[in-house]
Image (cartoon, rainbow, N blue to C red; front, top):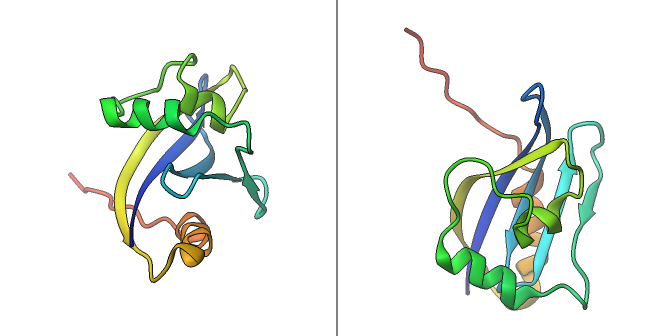
Length: 120
């Protein structure tokens, strides 16, 4: 089973400081955020989450740059008006079974971020 996982950066609108990271996978009805101020993984969404609408937003294409505050994706991940949410990456993760999906996505979110810096 292949899971389409989108990773998001959540930053402070005024300073650009990283506030947290999030992963969303509609097929697994999974969304979680980890904040830089805490090592705790915070799951988002519940039985009332409108996964079909979020899936439609993703199918239309996640735009480069900040998501609109009216985006269901943005509203799912944070309600903080002072936060900016933007897609950092999209990856397809190979999952052994549907039961392992949540654990795989948790591990993906909690993995250390490796960034490349270009020297000039």
